[in-house]
Image (cartoon, rainbow, N blue to C red):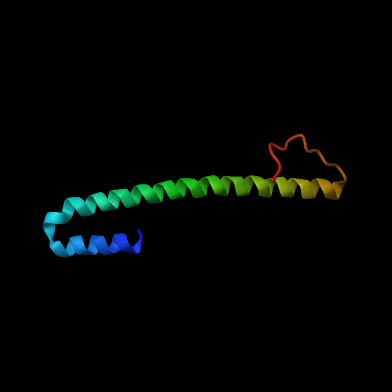
Length: 76
């Protein structure tokens, strides 16, 4: 949560129990943003892992003199 959001949350907390709903809504919004970021990072992680496999395979094939690029989906 950005600092401004934390400050707004703290201000609501200082107002007391009547702000439970607003604080809950802020936390739901923050959770949704975190989940979206996790999904973005997961996609990036999968792409990085695919590239690692590509380079491991290419390195192994280069060392044996046999290079087969037919399995390549798209170039890294």
